[in-house]
Amino acid sequence: MSPVLFASPLVFSPASAALFSYSATTCWKFRGHHILIMTLDVLRVTVDTVLTTTGSSAMSPTDPTSDELIRLDWGWPSLELNPIAGFQASSLSFFAEADKVQSALHYGSFAGSDEVRETYAKFFSHQRAEALEAEQIFITSGAGAAMGLLCDIHAERGQSVLTQGATYQNALKIFASRQLHVEPIAELPGGDMDLTALDALLSRERERFALIYLIPTFANPTGRTLDIDTRRALVTLAQRHEILIIADEVYHPLHFSDDVPPPPVLSHFDETGRFVVSLGSFTKIGAPGLRLGWAETGKSPDDHRDSGNLITQLSQHGTVQNGGCLNHMTSMLVAEFIRTGGLSHHLSNLRRTYRERSRVLHKALTERLSPEFISVKEVSGGYYLWLEPSEVLTGSMTALAEAAERHGIRYRAGNQFVPPHHPDETVVSHGIRLCFAFYPPRELQLGAARLTRAIIETVSGERA
Ligand SMILES: Cc1ncc(COP(=O)(O)O)c(C=O)c1O
Image (cartoon, rainbow, N blue to C red; front, side, top):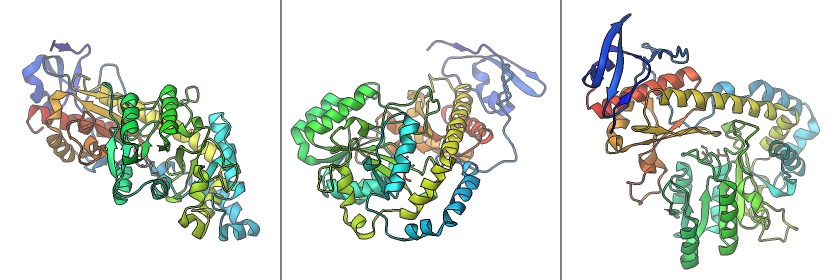
């Protein structure tokens, strides 16, 4: 590997400087800091107390008094962003109207009240600049709960679910709790799904598979988004093999730029309404405690006897027939929140804030870590940055996780997103998922600094 020269001097803490003195070409002291102009043969790493000569005020020094663990493993929305005032205001006006409360206290219609579904359809049509009808929507008590219902309808114990190579860890639990196996879809070099191989597999062994589960947009954990051609090809494939695709689109509304929205949700391309269902959730765009989401299809049922349509199938599930709408009162409160403009305002705030947070974390990491060592992918939406270590680190992922704990930073290791009973040596199983949504910039910078120190320690084999 050729030597790497840092163009600008970097200021290091003495402890970190000691770790790299063997490879530094120049090292001198300035105002109590060791300054290094480095030529490194092995890797390029900078550390937490970096104050680059670019004058970046974004890099604040590590707070020596803070020993609290930073949980970048949590895929949670930020507590301080919760839309408390807006939700209070719309809920108070809702509860002030006795007829609304009366209807909220009664059973809701199976797929959700017409008024609620109309409000959601209008809201998302406007957000996406695409038509969505109320009849294409089924109200759920969250994306996870909807997956459970769809498994009840479409899967038999012992069958397999096909997923991306790395997928949402709790979806794996939902499938396991229904005694379903999970098999990753074959991938091409570079990580795209191999649709030719998938087509061939389904031609040979269709009966073995219950359904396909995908996260098409700003995926958890990799942040990847399927392009429009891939979406079309997947839908054609599902229609040809008559297999259900559950498209988990909970991050779809969280794109950072209105100018470059992601492609339409996967169900949009299924003009039959029979093979693809997209799941949305207010967990990531409202608050997790709402336990509210929706399922949508590309076509509404012709009537209640249209049993091939996925909205009809969900409406006929025994749990729904028993109690009506799965989260009736909350769905009405959220509809009111939408009507008062609260959700639109909140969503804009989330998009702006997450864009800033993702950039802060990306910058803090890429300023310190060379891609020859660990690559950090930039994202244009969602919750997560995905890091892929090079061979320098892949053999030491357990040691890295331990070092990270010692330095006060926790992340989610890639192997938690890989279906069980599959070879651990895939690229994704060595990856690292960091959530930028929960913490403000200060903690994200601190987290990046701590992770860098853990990496240095792991590679050098010395404790800092
Ligand atoms: C891909 C994905 N799907 C679903 C969920 C959970 O959605 P819900 O809270 O609506 O069940 C999450 C939350 O972390 C997620 O990352």
